[in-house]
Length: 149
Image 1 (cartoon, one colour):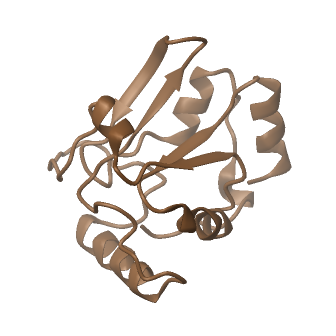
Image 2 (cartoon, rainbow, N blue to C red):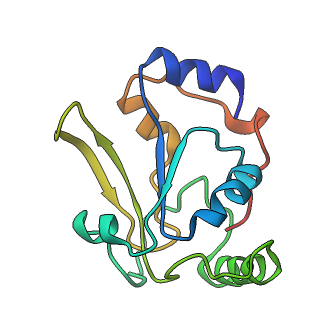
């Protein structure tokens, strides 16, 4: 992630947090692979996912694909499986059917925005979420290369 991007996030007084469903062993490899340098936690039992109403399974949808997803359902599944098998720790990194989402929270218990992914291609575009919290449009093309999921 570029310095400009990090400066915008800092100026907007925003804290970015990722909550993964795998083991803590995957935090460092994930950060190396993606360039993510903000807070990250893991929830192997998926309790947070359940409490937030995140879905399990793939809901087929004709909605527009996120610009951050560069594969289709089949090729993305195969690439994820290949990375899991050939990665530093052989682990399927959680329940492959568990969908995630994007939230804007706080202060306190206020939920300002929530998007629950319907399938692994249904990610909310990063810039649209960042703009909701006052971060101007960010050009991610100069940052780390896009990985295929």
